[in-house]
Image (cartoon, rainbow, N blue to C red; front, side, top):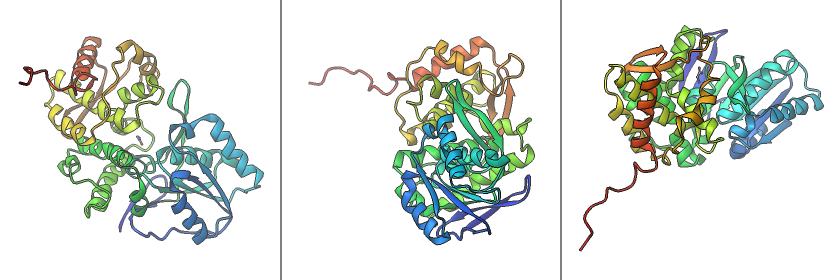
Length: 353
Ligand code: GLY
């Protein structure tokens, strides 16, 4: 078991391992869980004697205002008071939604996160961000609200569908680019039963904790965690969620590497292409740049009217900066030729005899 700590705003543990001891503070308890993780949630509810449970379908749909309202009403209908601890079992969408419920129900109650996907372990559950989507874009509503602890039981990963297992690790790879940590860029051995998985995940979480502690409320340094996400959120928005988050971030990272190269930085394109070879994502949809513009214009990293991109100029060296339109368009055309529908077709050769 690996035990880490986030020290802001008050210290809380982040444990990664198998058969973890989850604390049971005094007071009422409620459990919100992703139905995909119901067997783990059931065991937990039984062990901790939790009577109030609500199962939801995971994924981005869980981050709608209507679902948020439903969860608040469930807490209110059960007359759960302010000293309730909310346990949240699930992937990144559930921990984002549940955290925001905890931040706002009765002006704030305690919660404990039990992430059951690689994405939630490496990114969503650590760092105090909670949030919801609007039809206008992702994560446009939210609050910083720290959990009492994060307990990532790797047993839960055994039942994760392989594409979902891989997708979360795109964020770990991103942490490798941010910190210049070669070990996080080695994705090939990553499998649920790989003996090194616990250390790999802990290493990725350590990067996230370091960034979050340096800039808890995203005034500067933390923006670097959005590497690849500006394009990714626009792709997710323009495809109405048809492109998964991990896939969209992988394409966003390739785009960021192309921007870095175009702006005179190191050539990280082959490094990111190795990630895509391992991920084997569906081809990137051939969307015109104009289809992405409405989503880019609502990006949270805008200052005034200027959109700022996180650009890797080298391993462990990122700049957050505006990028001229002609470079964006050129790199987007390159991205489509590297990853678009035509990119995966076998080259035409002479007819076979
Ligand atoms: N997922 C980006 C952050 O936590 O800041």
